[in-house]
Length: 160
Image (cartoon, rainbow, N blue to C red):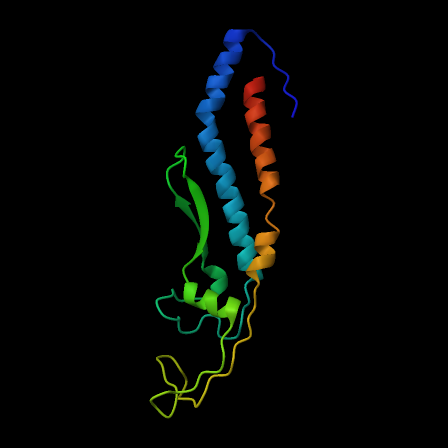
């Protein structure tokens, strides 16, 4: 990065103070942009089955897995541990999709039954794992976001 600084020392000090004041907000904005781009990519990559809005698993929220991703702020802006995380309101369904499971058969009854099931069934077939999330995570271009942050910070220092 190349900075072109014009003006006297007092003006430069004022710009540095302005840059310091704006830096936490710039960092938060960059982190939110990265988080939202991950949410969008996960939503687009998530499988959509015929029953994707069916009965929720465990304490999961209802609805399709693709609609369950969101950005969560972790700590206040400017705090050393401040971060964002991408989470889901359907962790049990996400685990099932990512890791799959074997066949399910009844243990104490003669058929499987749960609320929302069309009728009792003798077994539920295996679910193959679908790691749709790893390619999304591997493709995150945080460096591009950091370049945007760096450019904005340089513009403040240059007085643009």
